[in-house]
Length: 601
Image (cartoon, rainbow, N blue to C red):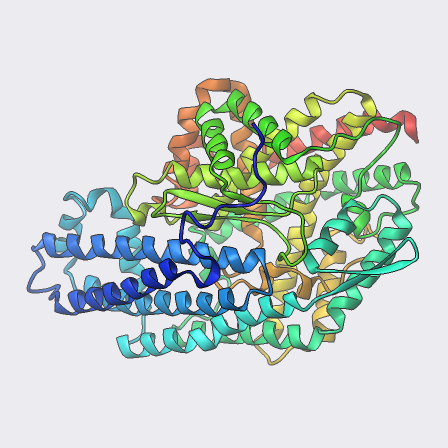
């Protein structure tokens, strides 16, 4: 069967970015939001403390609204990603943001009313059906409500964020749409969108050409550096002001709380990684020798290694689909079944064409009970791994669909668990299927470079954001300062092992401009090494691990990260042991790489 590489959005709302069905949905949601708000205001939490049916009705309406808004958001933001010049999609995305804001305002009132419940009544409520299953998120909501300002102040902040915080985030996407990167090819200069240029840089085999491409890439972002700097400053400024208004003095408190993890866990992870970077540097040195370079530069870290002649495997989209389904099957038939459904029902936008935003993601369609995956597929084995990664996200969402919505709101750190697990399954399969030593070396290098990204690139992002927020608390940070902060962070994270770096990375990386998740960096590294630990157990147990794995995923929004690891893996994340065990798997890959490449240097 031949699979299409474009997604089906008409089955969600027919008619494109100005779909009549979409507008009808928005209109219905607006009416339902008004009814929901009235229902909450009518509920007297103290007088009706034992009237659990009233609260049950409210939570049921909340679930319906969250699913409806989620459906609309995934649809319209997907169309905006697929065509950065689609102005109707951008306009309608703002309408969906306003819906989310209205719901947030109503939920502030609900949270405050829940805090008015006496402890004994609230605890008794959690023992009743249907609240028992959602005890953890309900407790979390009640605790977070203690930090809220008055209802009027919270509503004002939410309303201001539409044209403030969210507005700056939308502006970033509009700025990215204007980026054109000129590359000279065969004596002719071609201009590429940000997404296309990123793919071409990563695929370029000649180190001299990579160097020229990176320079052109840097210049393209530098031309608009002041605009990106203003955007980033105002996003962070809004966040810091919001924190201050809520009595939060430590800017790391919200991201840790969001990820349901403790600072001791984060510190244990980074400390263990920092103590193990020497092995990555050793890998860099060998890779430089294999590429006939004195020292690796920024793009060389992920460049392909060729030590001999072999027929480089190029995947069609259908071949990639078949390969992923087959290898998922060996670990989890349910995961394979989900992937097959995604390909057959066209959940995936993977066509390589102009006008798409860079990067990839998976977004949930809670009403359709599907997902939509966005990426640009050009046929490489690395693209296949990325596709598997996003399908892992889709699988995670699928195993939670029968749970209450409150039990589906997993944080980003554990969100990266299923995706990385799926990626590891496919990555290892490509290595096992290598037809020659040269091909195996190439594929091992790809896998190790991903580990290096988690240990160094993501660490650089984390170090940069920490230093940026420190400076932003004092005032506006200029574009030049931002580039210096990024350069220093990259040198520290990479142990100053590269010849050149990427100072404009602060502008080119979408993650720094994400309005939904603060510190959109360390959860990637957490998810990667957390999943490595899970993957090791899967290899030991084989097919019998599927149900244990699904049980872990189903708990990801129902307990803290530390409790999740203790319950399902019997490990303490605040100690280095677990992290070292996971990193040792990367060391094992590097040792094999060094052994296989010894004769080529």
